[in-house]
Image 1 (spheres, rainbow, N blue to C red):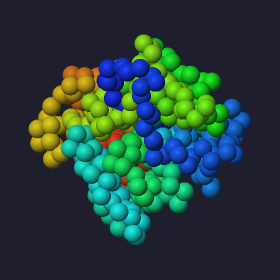
Image 2 (cartoon, rainbow, N blue to C red):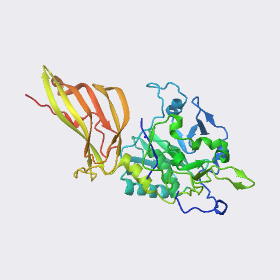
Image 3 (cartoon, rainbow, N blue to C red):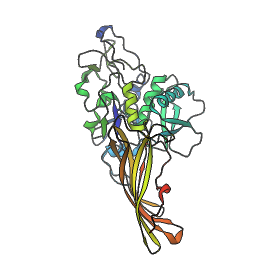
Image 4 (tube, rainbow, N blue to C red):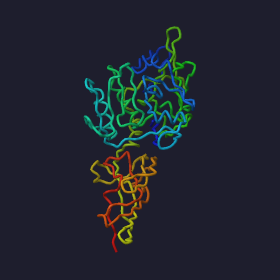
Length: 396
């Protein structure tokens, strides 16, 4: 069961329904002050409304967009070319993190432990890291929001001083690449959005990602128990002192705030990060000597394993999303880099990514002269961007 997963280049608890008037809506600790802070929204040229807190542009109420992502929505040309959709980046399966001085990490550590146990992601505390990482700070305005996918060197998650363990999981899941569940492309088959009851400042938080030209995938079936779904009263207006519902199931019953990471959430994250665990395999197919140059043909695969040490090969029990980087290199320079997703079907033991061709200068100790490369971003091993482990030549 599942949610909408952000595609790169890729996401509550359904209890027996009670009468609406008997349900006392729960306060959402990311919502109360947000309405006031988001009075001045920003409308992109493509018609998408974003909230704004200080210099941060906020998508769907709690996801920070980078300048590149906002420029994409504005349909403005940005560095390295114009992009038509919001770029998302999945993480490697070993994710560094740190937090500001004075931050109490209790609930964050509990949230990361849950994600590690059920999904297989490894979070590593690295003070002063030089890698892309998650950075936790207290929100000065007591609102919870964070970076939308791996977009920056420092991907900041703002949490209120009184944030809960569940809020920490929710915001981390956004940074890992998950939308809100009610933004799935198929959500109208499962819920009714009561637009007239939604605070106008937050109507954008109920838009389907597909209606805004964003790339994504609906993983599994709609999940009423997802930690990524709003409850029935999120961002509702008040009428005569009574908060109005903004979203109901098709049978008119309520959607409740999640009490845990659902199985649908777990399955969705496993589609991106596993297990099973991945390893990039590069096999030399052929090589030809031409004077002082060697031309080498390689095939690049991803294989799947039961264990992080990559000793026990296995097959996929479910479809797996891999985020691939490809490009050309000449010396130390890299050109034409592309990032895209592929879906590997259940039952696969390995997946062919592509052919790789390199030229090596034997007069310069085998230095690679030029060629093309592939890499898997959301992998459980260090990057093999330049296929350093496969400079094997098949000599006549």
